[in-house]
Amino acid sequence: MMEQQRPTIDYYVWLLSDWAYLGGVRFVQLAARHGLKINHIPMRMQDVYAGSGGILLANRSWQRQAYRITELKRWRSRLGIPVNIEPKFFPCDVDLASCLVIAGQRRGLPIADFVNAVMRAIWAEDQNVADPSALIAIADRCGLEGRELLDAADTEAVRTEYRDNTARALAAGVFGSPFYVFAGELFWGQDRLDMLEKAIVQSATGNLGRGPG
Image 1 (cartoon, rainbow, N blue to C red):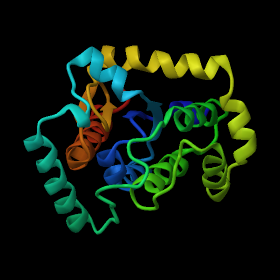
Image 2: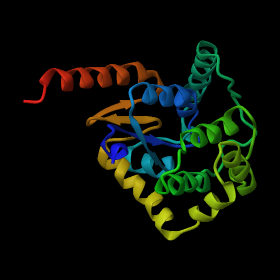
Image 3: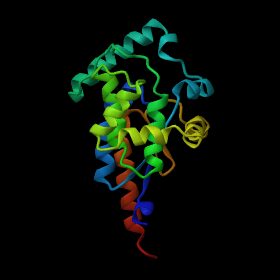
């Protein structure tokens, strides 16, 4: 019951997102600091882009692609987080990994560490997360039963939820990754985590200030 009463942040995430990777651990720490529950909503960014006017990396102009690399290097240095600018397995299919996230969350499992581990596997460890055996190993390292989670992901209910997350994201106003939605307010990008935290603090202060009446 107490779990249901905890305030929630909707976390729209593409598991292939470099920016979600850069913000992943800090976001989990932020949520823990304020006692917030994270509602993971993995998306197929290709479909979200198709519905919101986005352009996949390979189809962007050279100027945009070059500046992305510059920014990745800057944030890698600023945060002290390992980032392989050109991962061995990029792009890769993250559909199965996304379904494992959904399956774990549906079971009430703590899957935040798994989400971050999948992204770290892509961006720092040169692993192929499209490989089921790699996902099983990652899940096991996160204290989850990898084989059971893989089996749980192989259901129509999970695949349907994953497909439906596209419409859910678009209806919420989401067009990129990561997107954080708290109390109806949207924050796009790991560089907005400080603004998200400010909104959380202000919300808590406001709730305390109104009192029981």
